[in-house]
Image (cartoon, rainbow, N blue to C red):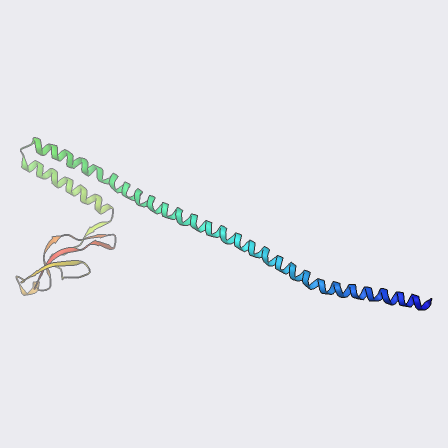
Length: 182
């Protein structure tokens, strides 16, 4: 009987060892599955973060584009509001021109309106480019023709200005069209 008990114990031990071996084999598979699941969860989280970030960026881009359009519209609105009094003055001058025969008074009225217009544009940062008598500069002037200079000191200089050039702040927005002495 002792032999049978020893055999039973040995068999039980073998079953236990096999079951431990089976558990050892299953554990890496379970670990691999859990690692895959963890990686899938992380990938899903990253994808969710990416989609949210992309959506936020698209919203930001649309919002800034809309704000830029509004800014331009508002800037134009302020300029037009400042220029409306000049338009009103021109309309009054037009009526006065139709009713009056006094050229001197009409001329003074037109000069006043022009000065008011220039002041408003100057307040907005517009400044004329000085050209006549200056040395020709391709960064400021656009030569439309070249004529013989009346004197030697006028060679390479601007003799006449056919269209004024303008700065807006520090940036040139229109080049002066000039006649250059040769």
